[in-house]
Amino acid sequence: MTDKIDIPIITIDGPSGAGKGAITHLVASKLGWHILDSGALYRILGVVSEASGIDLDELNHSEVLRNKVTQLARDLVVQFKFNPETEEIEPFIEGKSLSKQIRTDHAGQSASKVAVISSARDALLECQKDFAKMPGLVADGRDMGTIVFTHAPVKIFLTASAECRAERRYKQLINKGVGANMRALLKSIQDRDERDQNRSVAPLVPAVDSLVVDSSLLTINEVFTQVIDYATKKKPDWFA
Ligand code: DC
Image (cartoon, rainbow, N blue to C red; front, side, top):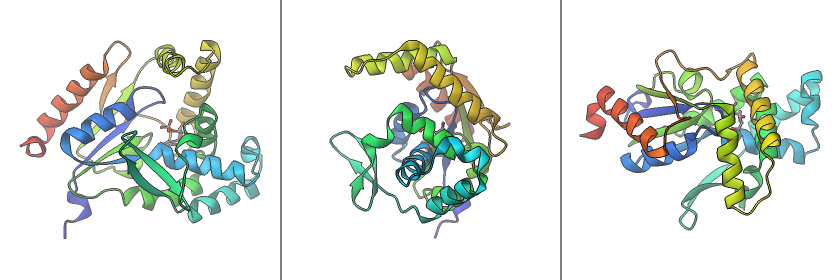
């Protein structure tokens, strides 16, 4: 059996809207590796917590509520299945797809609110580590390189200015025919950055041994090329 430590891992961390999801999919499909979308786990925890009546804006003031969220995290049984139609990995709870529910901006905010609870993060740790399987894993999140997979040989920190990320999100929504407000989107991104970067546990920071890529002025393909060039230099055997 392969020792877990020998499983090839690339971590891709960074703020929301920097293009981590797209790069993760491109890198994983080039290498034929598995994907961990850790944000989906936090989004599910946020959605499930709200569905059980927890007011996430009260979490800072109430240990009882934080303990409830932690218990929900411990009890969470999520299955991830590949949907060939959308070519996306969908999360399921008790046979029900949560794909649509967790992809809203509201769910992103809820995720960021439950993600400040240290004990809830601990409860999700093992589940995330279990994603490391041969032939390899590309792990997308905020603390993949700093907490969950500190031993990963290739770590990327993908960022972009808040304005640029808001504009991309705006275009995405407009293309989908969904109404969007640029100022509200920018505010939502800035709020989430503020919470994710300044929390006391697992804050969003680049790992010291990561390659920082600012995608503000780059296309997805240019970012992809930089990531692959860097990974090839660090681990040529992965690409042999
Ligand atoms: O990547 P995302 O937008 O789906 O993440 C949603 C939120 O979940 C993000 O704002 C913070 C939290 N999160 C986290 O704290 N740690 C991770 N590894 C992934 C996400």
